[in-house]
Image 1 (cartoon, rainbow, N blue to C red):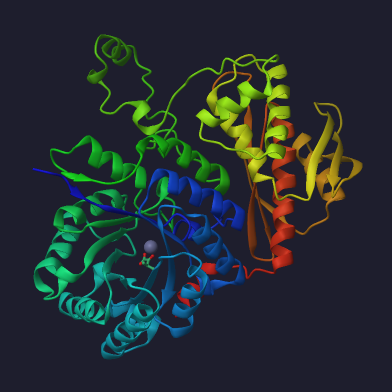
Image 2: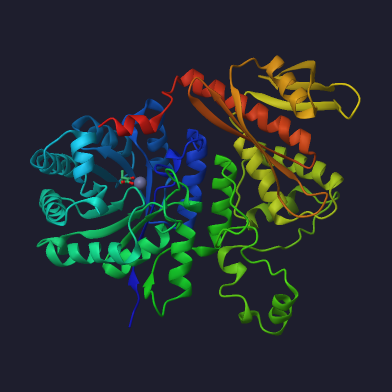
Length: 518
Ligand code: KIV
Ligand code: ZN
């Protein structure tokens, strides 16, 4: 029996970005979109164009950047939303408009304050309008899993009649359980008279830790599209994790006879990029992409693995792109060898970026004996992350310890002119942050300071995330260096740069609140 194809719809840039603190800049969204394209997801939900000018521009930029995936924009059941989505997406030869409205009694009564008949009219009007602007229309019944079945069937039938070609059935609040969700999808597949004209889709949230199980059950029930995010990023407890859905289908074809277009060897790279951009660390024991997902620590397991890998390994690390090859480059390696390695790792940098990355590689090779692929990836990601920064780290001298306050002497290049200052603090990090604030004044409040290690060992590079909040706007800054304090300085400077960009664009602070308003 041949496997049934499943459409992978990624919503990391839309539902994922709705996680408090996960806001991304336009450039970051484009970088993630490129990796989603490399991963070969079928549809990329790029954002919610009506939410702000920044969102509109980001959706447009993502639509332009995608070469394989179909770009998609979210719109409420409102004319302005739908037209704005089409306006942003029309830079692409084909695009999808995803329009939604709540259908559960609770949402209709309290959130929408609309009678069911009015909701039905809105379904018809919104889908018909979207269909005038593109052939590819998706309609979602928000809070579908708590909607009365008869009413849901009427809504779905209406949406299909009005032109929707994908029908999404969200478990918006993550309340469903696998048997129930499978039965729901199955019920729609059997009861809606025109269902053969549309594809049913799952969209499951993880409030009970069941998002992946529910999505796979939905597929067993007849869904042919799965909506998911990298690392399971998303509102509250998140969405179904793309990597878990895809690897479950790949590993258990006996129970899940489905295929998809995903190039699974790109999963680790994609997961890492999302984690480093958002500052949402992947827990070590997370399935597929956690640091321990393929680690075998106990003696019994190691012994078994040596005798036969299949004793404890159900999928290979290579199948998700996890390799630990030591880069045989050192202090004396030239640009060409470095460029070739970058190419192997999937990076194609312009001349200037290559030059900067090469200089940092040389500095790293001076400080660190073994350079791993992960080190190079982190270094390049770090360079790419700060390519738009006007203020750049130049140098840092630090005095810290048990005697007296810590002292940081800091140099920062702002638009080509180097500024310097000395500041004190309650510990080295405080002194560094005070020095940065001295040179780059801002009102941002520190809400997260997080240190991770890129590889193992005492000489591992540190990866620092700093989250700042200023007047309701949140930004994440990243910094990587073999010196943890330099990484902290780079991360803080990066965050302050991003605050300045947000301030300039005067982006409205909270996207999610806007979404809830209708
Ligand atoms: O969870 C949800 O219901 C959503 C819809 C907007 C599709 O994200
Ligand atoms: Zn959602």
